[in-house]
Image (cartoon, rainbow, N blue to C red; front, side, top):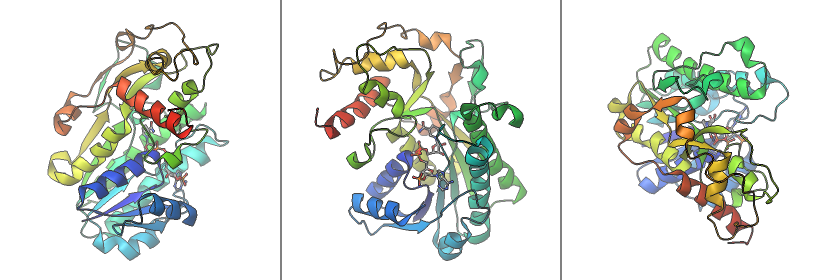
Length: 341
Ligand code: NDP
């Protein structure tokens, strides 16, 4: 069975490829932006013959996926659409975040309808950002679940890159559900909606000075000093990348069960202090990094919006990794690459 995976070079996507190939029953066609990325991924995956690449240079182009799907569409069983800009380091919120997310979703979905007649299932990597009301994250009277939608309108999204990113994920996912109906898609559809995703990079060679946006939250404190302040700039939820990869694959294995579902992938609440507390249990880091006010976040669950993802947990039926494990695994890989493990 063949899976088309967009954004194959991404943090989450590489773990998804790994799990697909490890399962031994999938061929993967990954889209990347450049030959360099294809070559380094092929090398990391030991030139696995079940992994091949196509070039999709910019998902903001409406027909970006057409050529690849004209060529490979007839052999596709599954599509996982993971490519989307996840960075706050941008100049134009609409052009750099919202348009690629929205046009990218529409482009790959239409290409799937038009050129992949045997497609069984389409999985889109959405986000918790498409679900929550960012302005109510610390309102513990606010309850959310798989049916909740980020209410932010377009004009508010232009206020700053964080709002812009959250809006981009909402509009990208909405586009998928809208087109599912409008185009009367013959395949099943699932959205995977992760909170902040931590965990090791799929390959040590991806450990660079600055990591992908979510892992950088941990990386920053691995490289902190005892003087570094542990502020409240981040209060959110965590999930491990290996659980996210698995959540992308389960729908392919039991398509009807997951049809029309949103998987709210949340492992629990955390703040910067909770991360620092875990990092300080690692002997190589203790005494060298920020300390803050230990255990200040122990009650964070009660201070934040209440997430009920019991429907997701019931569907997936596997345990999510805890904060200690995901933060430790993220940090230990960094220390190993830096020769400090
Ligand atoms: P990465 O930044 O590692 O991956 C993003 C991927 O999208 C890369 O492959 C990137 O290609 C590709 N991409 C971005 N913009 C374009 C574009 N204009 N044209 C073509 N390709 C593009 O991040 P993650 O792995 O974390 O993110 C993957 C998905 O998961 C995204 O949809 C993100 O929104 C979502 N997500 C991530 C969360 C997290 O905490 N990490 C949480 C919730 C959702 P290139 O490598 O060439 O830049």
